[in-house]
Every structure is written in C-alpha cells, then in structure tokens.
Amino acid sequence: MAKKVFVSGCYDMLHSGHVAFFKDAARYGDLYVGIGSDATIFGLKARQTVCSEAERLYMVKAIRHVKDACINEGSGMMDFVKSVERIKPDIFVVNEDGDSDVKRTFCEERGIEYVVLKRVPDAGLEARSTTAIRTTVKSRLPFRLDLAGTWIDQPHVSKFHPGWALTISLEPTIEFEERCGMSTSTRNAAKKIWPYQLPNYNSEMLARLLFCFENEPNKQEHVSGAQDAIGICVPGLSRHYYDNNYWPDKIETCVDEDILCWLEEHICMKLMFPRRPGTSVVKGCNLNEENVKALADAASRCWDAIMRKDLDGFAAAFKASFEAQIKLFPGMLADGVEEEIAKYKDRVLAWKMPGAGGGGYLAMVCEKPLEDSIRVKIRRRGE
Image (cartoon, rainbow, N blue to C red; front, side, top):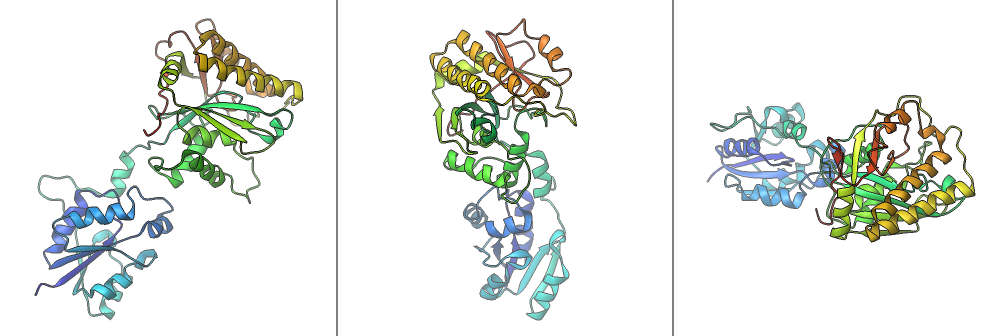
C-alpha cells in the first residue's frame, strides 16, 4: 500500500511552482493537500484571496498528482492540525520557504516523517512564486472622476443646502498619480480589502463597505466623502444626493451606452502637479447657503445636460460647478494652478480639478480630446 503524503498551503494564484511541488511530493506516495481557508489567509496576511477557498479546492483537486484535498479547519500557521489527525499521513512535505521548527517538532511528536524539498521548476519552466507574481499583477480596481458637486458630500457643506454630486467610475487604463484628486487614498484602502478587483456583488453595498472601512469610527481624522467610495464601486455615471449626512439619501445611476460613449468623447485630462505638502484647500472657506446652493444647482444642470447629450449645456454646468467650488474654497487655486489652467482654457469648453484641488489633474470638457491628453474609459456594469 502506498504511503500517505501530506502538504499544506494557501495555493492562491495557482502556478507552475505549486504543480512542480505537488509532483515532487507525490513521488513519496499518495498526495493529500490541506488548503488554507479564506479566513485563515486573511488573518495571516491581512488581505482577501484572489481565488476563493472553493475555487482553490476545485483547482488543486483537478491536478493529477493530487490524490485528494481539503480545506483546513484550523487557523494560523498550524491550521492543518485537524487535517493531519484525520488523514494520518506517513510523510509531511514542505518546501524550503515553509520549513519551520514548529512543524518539524509537530511531526516528530506524531511519528511522521518530515521532508523538506527545494524549489525546482520543471524542465524548461521559470521558477515561480506567488510573491513574485503579485509584484507583476496590476490592480484592476477602478478610479473615480467627480464631474460636479464636489464638497457637497461633506455634512459641513450640505447642511447649508442639499444637493447632488456626480461621479463616473473609471477603468484603470493608467495608474493615476497620488495626491492628485483621483481618490487614490480611498482606492488604496479598497486594495486592502480587494487587492486586484471588486467582487461580483451589489455595487452600492460594496461602496458602503469601503466607506466604513476607510472611515473607522475611532479615528479622529477627516472623514473621506462617500462620493469617493461610490465613484469607485458603482459603475457608469452616478449622482448621489446629500442632505447634512455623510452617506447620501439616494443614488441614481446611468449605464446607457450612448450617454457613456458620448461622455468619453467629450472629456479629457491633463496632469498638472500633485498637491504640494502643506497646501490647505479649506483655509479661508466661504460656506453659506447662497454659495452651496450655486454648487447644488450647477450639479443638477450638469446631470440634465448629460442626459440630453447637450455639449454646450454640459460645459456650462461643469464650469459653473467648478466656479462654485472655488468660491466656497478659494484654497483650491493653490500657487501655480491658474497658470496651468491658462495653458488649455482657450482650447476647451470647460475645466475643473478633480477632488479637493490644490493641484493634480485638470479634467476638461471639449469638442474633441486634446492631443496627448488622457482619455477616460468609463467602467460598464459587469466589467
């Protein structure tokens, strides 16, 4: 009768190195594989898995060198204890990275032979590791671009007058710079939950989860506006209505293909410079009912113009929204911003800085995108 051989690991992002390890381990007998659960991996590495435990179990079982596989019931580095007690292997195999005195002692106490294998790729293949692969895989998490109503998602603004914020969810066709108004801080928070892509789940619920994750209740810091989480998680064009609360009273979404294509044809972006350290965009703010109402009215007109695919109306409302923003928060026009805007204002219909301003990108409404400008690709539902 063949001896029983046991190995244990995560086997997320399954690759040729895993298969080569299974092949080598199977030379000692019938191979049984213990797989770390999603909860165990999150506890050890503070990140979600790329493939769920059900997917990983399915793939590992499908490998011809594997006799059988299971999800380990325990937790932590020794999550395989119950699996070993049930399978009763004769040999426990680890690779060099997985070798430890704790595992060796565990096997000695139970009379299990302990074998350490070197990482050797099969002939003609490169050496592979999950860590190396992770460094080359780019995140597919969206960015967000706010079109109108920026600042209305803060209660200290919307308490003067309620209104809409408009956002579009962007495919990550480029990696936008940090501190440039593209909600990279919220996106970085999202990466801690979903490293590579959003899960296939209700988009508004994902936005709520992200908003709550980024804004922990015990943090004594500025609360990131909900428009960032919504813009990242909710596909297409969205508007969200704020009335003296951090979370909007309602969210409306447009995923009409004609409208999204029209927007893509009439929006382009240029990089200016990141917001400089020490820049205060809230210093000298002019918060009152009149100014906030102007912001809210511009956002409403912007949505209506987009629904009609009215380019002149869209540009006028887009520009009016930005003018309302800088009237509320003059600090958005930090040193050098107006000089950057002057480079393009005669070539486009309207312009604004995404986010809180102070630098970053310049988003522009145009008849045709400028040469060498950044084009936007709006994320469709299900992509």
